[in-house]
Image (cartoon, rainbow, N blue to C red):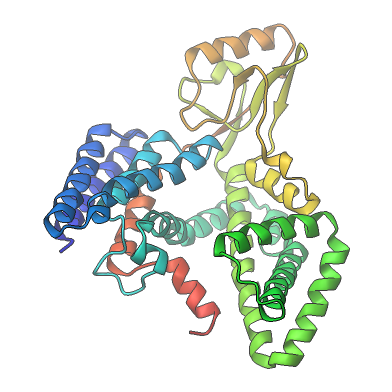
Length: 375
């Protein structure tokens, strides 16, 4: 029974959500003891049932959850508190909950429930972000940005789906005609490589994509075209999500401050670094870099490599030493006295929501996948 991890998860969720909303910080004592209890729970269950892998599942879940969160921490999307919360939930439920109705295979057979927890947190909070962003744009009367949420990058979205059709056809051909069965990981890596190539040579990718769509529709019939439309709608939904994130980042959750008004713990929305004796700024987000990498085929763009970083958009915020350094650079005329500061948004409640959805309902992303395939 998963009653003990469930109760522990609810306690942790209530405490972390409350402190995050009230103070903007996560108290480690609300997470680590709970995560430790989860590890001990599965250790005991595994030893009792003679299942060594199950005994280690709590530790594995903790590690996988931490890894996912740490990646987001590195790109400045999450604070360290969010990382440990996801790790804690993952230690409590390394596998899909027995109460869940929709269970993804990867969370049933492997301790990868952290993926379910993460995606449910994102998907679950999306309607609130959507309403919040739209309300902010309407209040600020920014009609053009409002339209951009629905119209920006539509062509790229269609192209991506067409390119995926090409990769799908490629793997079908080598499997059917050459009897080569590739490991799923190889197929995933191959898909990423092919998408990067098509991003660089878009016209070729588009021609191949349209050709593949016509041929598959002719051979398979309307069901394939319907699958294409469903996939396109899913990608369009993700496009809207990223557009909402961009609006929140650029319009709603940011403000511009002079150095005199910067405070400790303020979260910058830019990189400030020194290179070849010159102080430079980079205000481009990781999402924008990733999009540029896909469209140009140059994956090195997403690699963050700054020498002598002075201040960065880490979710931990500015330190007193960094603020003093920025003041000095402004006084010396090396920096314009305007800094982008992000308003913090507590994410612990979203993680708690994702936890509750995961435990009592299941994997929302897997549900989308099932619906997309008409199952």
